[in-house]
Amino acid sequence: MPEQPRGETVTWTAICQLDHLLPERGAAALLGDTQVAVFRLHDNQLYAIGNGDPLSGAQVLSRGIVGTRGDVPVVLSPMHKQAFDLRTGACLDVPGVTVPVYPARCRDGLIEVAVP
Image 1 (tube, rainbow, N blue to C red):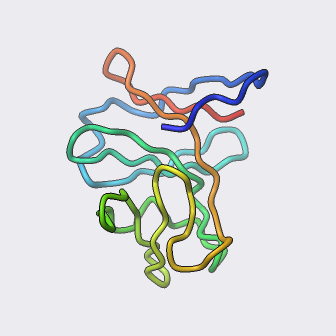
Image 2 (image 1 turned 90 degrees about the vertical axis):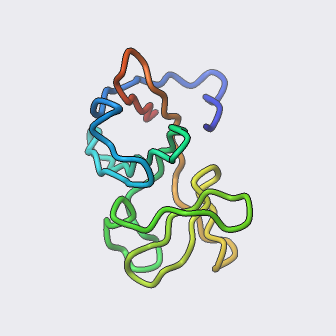
């Protein structure tokens, strides 16, 4: 999970109950004007990244295939199958391409995401 930037105020927003998001699946949420893709891994680790695929412009990453590349948790874009690191947002197939990464946590059974 990314660290909260120093001096930057974030607001945690409840997305859904943890048990409503199946392991190895994603869900999209709209937080203000920001589309976020939230993922729950098989070990209940949570990740949140921007939902937009920067290579196609489509808001689809929440519907991508979740897996690993080596030890790196990734989601494959449903558009052209580029892999995005869920920890950093970096595209592993196209250097220099990234998606935003947001802090995510489970609190009292609810998945929460913080968007600055």
